[in-house]
Length: 65
Image (cartoon, rainbow, N blue to C red):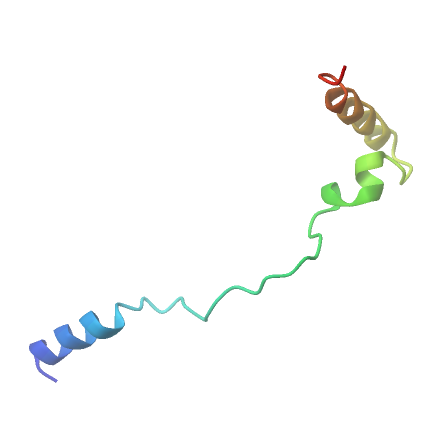
């Protein structure tokens, strides 16, 4: 291959640095515990989770009214 052929293939196809692999899979799964319903509401039994849920509720209700 000559330099012109390399240049032409780069223009047509772009440059690949070897990390491709295609599009990322999109899933609707909850990947962290912090986003699960039980943790948000503090229902799973942890005292700190109940405390955080209380603060979340207070923050959500702060400007309602």
